[in-house]
Each structure stands twice: as structure tokens, then as C-alpha cells.
Image (cartoon, rainbow, N blue to C red; front, side, top):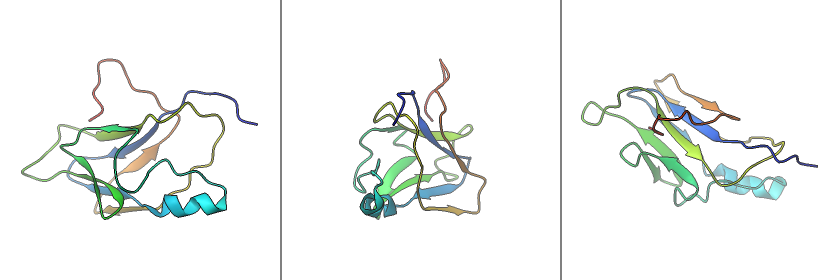
Amino acid sequence: MLKNIHVAIVAVLACGLIGVASPGLAAAADDGFESIFDGKTLKNWNGNPKFWSVKDGAITGQTTKANPTRGNTFIIWKGANLGDFELKLQYKIVGGNSGIQYRSFKLPGKNDG
């Protein structure tokens, strides 16, 4: 069924932008999907708390003039090693250039953002 392949799911947030992954993932469990976000905490997620938090049941990344980044800002899910999977999510990006990376890996010497 599933082959054990190391996977990291990375949400990418570019400077000065807001990206939100929706808690709708929790509801997806009824469709045979297993949520990787509990809607309350960043358990199993690794990202700089200066930029990443949970607000209104969603993963929220935010930079501002008062709280800028020096480049892209990442949050990485490290909950398990996965095989084949389908990624199902809802997102909202306000005025930005953001995206999702999957089956990625962290480069040595680089921080998570």
C-alpha cells in the first residue's frame, strides 16, 4: 500500500505576506483523510514562532514592516515518514506570492525560517 519514503511538507511564505492553511483538514478525516494539523497547536510543525502561529484554527504565517524576514519563511511538518499520499487543504494568501512544497528536504545549515 504505502512505501515508506521520507517526506517533509513545507509551506513557503514569501516576505511580507500572509498564508493560512485551514482547519478544514480536520473535517477531511471523515473522507478517509488523516489530518496533520490539530487546529490548535503547531505540534509536529517546525517553524520560527516569530512568524508562525495558530489563529482562529488555522496555521498563520505573517511578516510585517515591524517583523520582517530576510527571505522566504518556512514551516515544516515533521510528524512522520510518509509513503504515497494525497494532500488536501484549504488556504488563503493575501496579496502574495506563496506556495506549498512537498517531498522536500531541509538543506544543511539553513534554518526553517
